[in-house]
Amino acid sequence: MATRHYTDEGAEITPRPRTLTAERLGFSDFGADCGQIKFPTKKGQAIPIPHVRYTTKTDTVVIRGKAGGKQSDVMKAVLKDLVTRPDFAGKMFSYADRRMWDAANGYATPGSASMWREWNMAHHITRVVHDLAAMSGHSFEDEVEHEEPEQIDMFADI
Image (cartoon, rainbow, N blue to C red):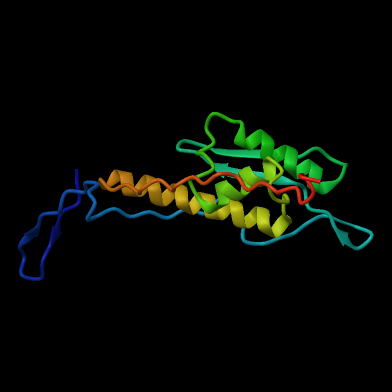
């Protein structure tokens, strides 16, 4: 039997139907990464594990780098694994996706542990905003892709 609620005057309160509409849309989550940075230490130095936490439309993908090796090379391999996945949203989806794509393809450095966390969260927030907007009938324009920069050889004509 359902609980009934009454006003002070004794009138029964009819609850409003709980439906998901753009006017009533609400959301919260914990994000793609934790709020504290705690790295294992060895001889007093922090050793972050190269990894990415990537939110897709249905899942969170975690790709961890192999132990050992040069950290930048390991993270570049992690990012290469990410951007070649079929559920990668594309380099134009968010600034974080572009940054991860650039690093995976050698156009930028693979960053540091704090940058990885930033990319995880920036992509996650963009994914959530896009998905919530779609639920309420809104969409975003795609970014315009520009040609990749190329270093010009100063002595090509000599």
